[in-house]
Image (cartoon, rainbow, N blue to C red; front, side):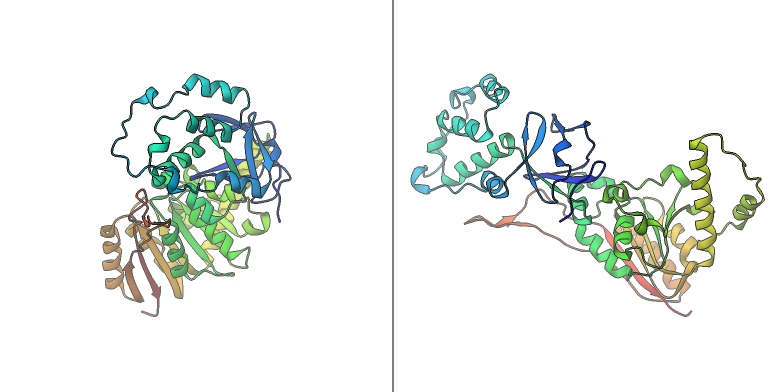
Amino acid sequence: MSTFKDGDHAVLTCHDRTKIVQIRKGRPIFIDKNKIFLDRLIDQRDGSYFELKDKYLCNIDTNQAKKFIQTEDISSDNAGQDNRDLCDDGSVNQTLQHEEIEQLKSEGVSGQLIISQLVSKSATFEKKTAFSQQKYLNKKKKKYILIYRAWKPSIRLLCQAYTHDLQKILYLRRDTLAMLLSLSNISNGSNVAIVESCQGIILASVIQRCAGGNGFIFNLTPAGEKNSTSPCCDFMDFSNEYTTNVYTIPIENVGDLNTIERANQAKPIEKPTNEKTLQALERRQRRLDGLQLFEKTKLNSLIIASKYDSLSILQHLIDYLALSSHFVIYSQTVQNLLECYQFLKKRGGNIHVEIADSWLREYQILDERTHPFIRMSGASGYLLSGMIVQS
């Protein structure tokens, strides 16, 4: 199994929380107001368990970790029949005060012992039903038992990390992303153009699926470099083999041959003054190479998932698609896709033009209480897909 190195990214999961972090020796991170050092993750295996001790994540045995975080099995013999007589009286029900809990934590007392003291000093715990007792214990575990699991980043885990911040990726759920990739018909060797505003999660998915093939991946960004950052691609820690065929170019320069001519006529700088200037020149040359390559290449797939006007982007790029190529457009609202649908029907030269949406519902499966999760994304936008044929 692969191991973590200094500078790698990792996905930390703790109960129902997920966070993307970068492992930097001697540099702390903050999770839920906790200052944590990740030094001891270095050289540990993917999927290992860690416990927070003295601001450091320390490796613990897998079986022991699972025992700590597993759901409590409460017998109904030691529980009440109902909760009708319970009343929330604050400090009267719980005699263990906040100051005492903080003192125990400062002394290094384990989370299991703190929970046992909370139970023993609760005046109402034994009167609660078995379900209420189990819910109480699980809630305290999430607060006092900080067992983290470190994973190598994957597309599924990145989608999970954005679950509580879906507006950053335009509410693109993992099932919709899977459907988008399937409809785009991307494979090793495909020439793909992507216009997205989803933190680079679609670009990262395409790079992973193409796996450094012979095709080209064009990341078309509005406003040039100012909007060309792709955090999800950085999180995936792709090797140079995967990204050599990826070009980031400004979408406003596509189709503008004067841009290439002006760049060729410009006088080159013989001696860069410093390293920053050299890096800027390399990025500029990379964009020009990508732009020239884009003008000569027929695309096999086009993916649009942008916060900007999808119709104008489609009109600008549709002529670059080869015959039998696929296009997919994602939008949070169906109205934007209806405009694209009408344009495609009037233009002709396309088949299987359809608008679809996906539906995903997660369920809690426990004894005598199976129901959908209450806090979940109910909708994840719409997809317009089709194929280019001879007009």
